[in-house]
Image 1: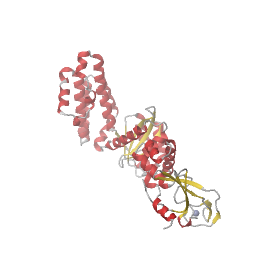
Image 2: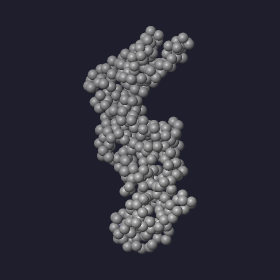
Image 3: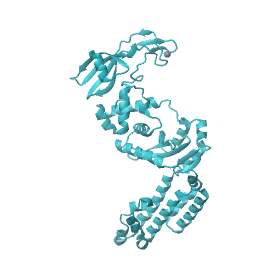
Image 4: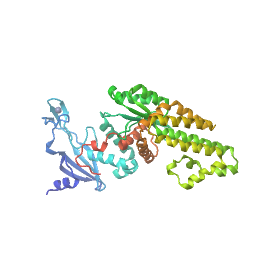
Length: 414
Ligand SMILES: [Zn+2]
């Protein structure tokens, strides 16, 4: 076996032939002179073999994956060809995308590594600066997602998320059935969501949306009503529970402010216990809360109401659920707790859209699961400065398109 063939076998190069090699920079870099397998000269658009017009004079370099810690760079001078249909054009390069400076293999490795670790760690492994990595990643994702159309969106969810240490916001649209993110846009509120409906969906697609879930903000509700005439709106369960928990916590805070040191001792450490779902409580926890009946009536009352509200999610018939909710609202109003009365006001505003949950329990466990991944992505990067780098990673980890799978490489080496 000749040296070149051995090298080609070891490096597992599939789409190209090695014509020469050289070690540079004290064996830190391996430079390979290559040419496309079967001599190339194919049109990038129609794959037809075409006559050469000009042998290119300039050699181009593509960075390949590092092998045993050694950077590998492949060199080739692309030819200019004349295609009968597409005219004068540069020949098809089988190992890399057009205008790309890195090979498909490296692109695949970048995507696969960024899915499972921080960009910083990936940059260390790939031996490149972090800024270069995020730049390359952005280009890959842009290229792969360019022209990608959202398909079969029937159940959508809208939510907003903060980045850049909570100072900037992005609007995220989910496909709740397939459990993935279909769109990420800058800003929050009406303008952002309008952009989604106008840019990403056609008229027909908007009409095919049957279910939509969002928080209780007027902007999103109105936008969904305007753009998706056939959609039934379901208020996101997660946001309702969150609002209720906040209302209960407000009672605790208010009591804390009013009470002296003696009274404070009783309600100390209750915060997370009050927010806990009854399913997760131990007997000891329940005993602790029951003791409040004598020591702090107000918090006890708020807690009992909160616990009762949990039953709402288990109803199977809308009429019964409606009756239950109305009854609960009356009881909550009678409690004369201001924050709970406020919560009842919110419920009343969205009453119909909350009851729809019983007809179609849009399990936001899906969106919550996605949100958890997004949170991990966020923590990994410890605060993004630009939306681009944030949305790149969201689309890479939980997007509707499997990005590494779209990279046309024959060997997927990690
Ligand atoms: Zn052609």
